[in-house]
Length: 169
Image 1: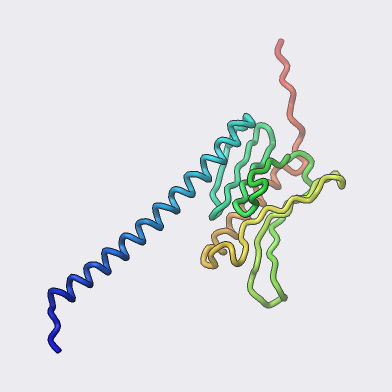
Image 2: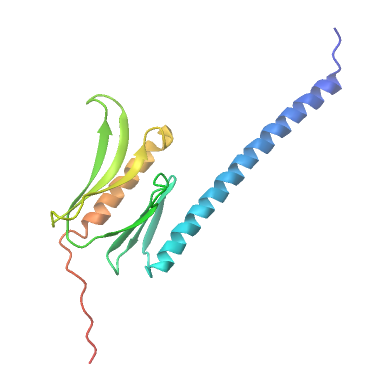
């Protein structure tokens, strides 16, 4: 059998072009989804008159901090009913990073922050940073470092005095 090299090169070029097109389309859709997520987060922040000092993207989630009003804003893409939530940072007893495993020696399934308030009537807040099956495995270490950073940042507000009322004379 004799193959026409021109035809084979044409087929290979088509395959390479198709792969390039599919890759570009996937990146475009990811960028569009991230843009939509950021817009939703920004609209929520503006609607509630918050001033964010720090924001960070956590794979598909976003976290932000308003130091002036002592508020933490968290957008959880997995929560379809109420994706953006505001949490008060006043009266925090503790904030710690929780790493869940199936057994003691197994791999990490979930990484989250747990915020506990001094007032026992307030519910415990759990903010997901990494969830097996939802987030890519190779991003686990990066998300764990981000969780540790936010643990330290939130713990700065433990025992923080309530807002000082300004007096003008």
